[in-house]
Image 1 (cartoon, rainbow, N blue to C red):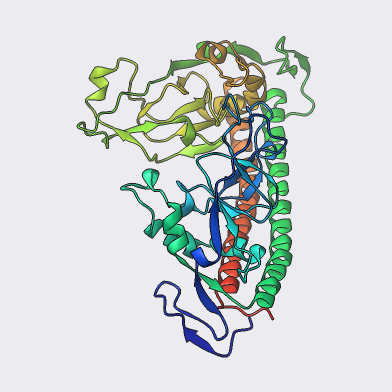
Image 2: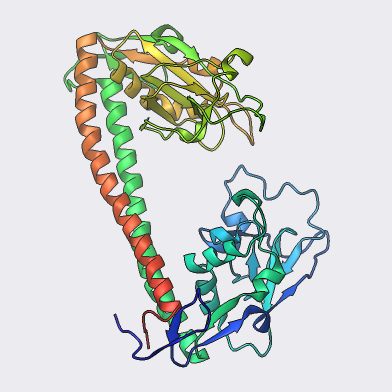
Length: 432
């Protein structure tokens, strides 16, 4: 790593030392807020801003069945142009800002800042600078609000802050260097993520084959009479989930009162806590014991039990809970199966794709308890269930190990990328 030979005190405590030749300039000398509004039917793309990717066309970042915007009219939305800063002032402390590469329109709740004509800055450099964690931390310090969800970085506060400003040619060189290095890192990350998806697909295939066809490749087969199962060994039977599991239930969301102790001691499992194929060993949310007497739908389930997310972003995900607790209404609990617990859970995982295809609704699909109860699972003799579960435990552990290695690589690369950007844009690393 090349370093600058001479450093100086920037005169700003949170910026600290910086290379000789660099300046500290207040944002109000570099940018100005613009408030250009669009008409009802603008011929411009709707843009979104995110802590993950900066500014991008919203149509590229939403699911196919998600509405582009819930607003009845886009009239009054703000116009931004290429090289403008777009900032979600409610999430500036989480890096939800960036320099746009597009002409477009953004939410009226966002702020748009434009480079002043005489400002000695390269906006590609600025994009990297304002999205560093150090700058986000400073934005948080100057945001108004009591709790994180209420914080706002108002324009006057942003414009009153300082920024690192290297000589313009150096900014351009830094931006070009980071474009190249980040593209390389992002390519490796994308490749690792694609490999993870391949391993997940392989794992699902291994589970499906073992659960529906068994471990004996020479076993005589028969038609199961269930479309998703297809052929299964002749000695197997089938049964519905509502006859396999002794406990099938759900929960609710109590009405929280600030005057009530909502912090425990009962674990409250939400659909967002459910990661397909994972385990639940702890949760972020707890509820007061008094809620049990107020809400008949709230019951404490004792582990181990299976939780299936019935709607929301986690729809179809399932996990085994090894902690006791209540669930909200988006979760279906399956407990005390009369079959081998681990085999029955693998059978549920094999069912997932079919379960998702059975979901009701359009924009907000859901899997009801009735749909879950009515599903068929293949039932081998109990000794065979035990053997299949043991085989899958071993096989899936090996696959999960490879996935964990790839995920660790991704985390390491993302950390390195953030460090590389920070060190480069703040003068800790020299690129030219």
